[in-house]
Amino acid sequence: MASYLIMTPPGAAADDERARFIADGFSWTAFFFPALWLMAKRAWLLGISVAVLQILLILVSTLPGGFTAALILQLALSLVVSLEGPLFIARKLAAEDWTLRSILPARNIETAEEIYFSNATAAAHHRSATPLQSIEWSKAGRTEKATGLGLFESYGER
Image (tube, rainbow, N blue to C red; front, side, top):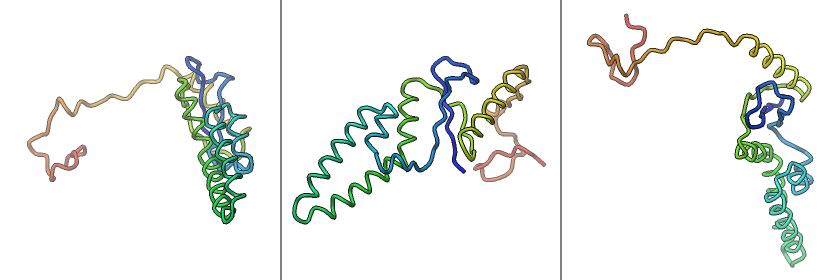
């Protein structure tokens, strides 16, 4: 079961149809084609950097004794992009002021969309919920009969 990061464009409502669902998990496409996968996800600078690094690794593999080192570095690069690539995309969107709305565990993207949009429309109908009362602990200070070492507040005094 994968986790999906749900992000909406700047200024958009939670139930906006332009919401992006980013699967946070291993991507086989990113493993086999890391540079192309990043460019397809519009991470241009990172994709070009990975492509240049892959070309350099191909050149290193032609040197005597460089094949094993180039192969290990290529596998490491592919693993980094396939495991952390979705988070790179999420960070790029967050830098463009996209809002992280939710993180949902789901079997596939269709299920994630169904869960998210059903919760988003339900939340839109119940906007008149009463907020919880907050207790100002800083104004109240410690009571005289509070016990303990001072590491934890005694909320449920006896």
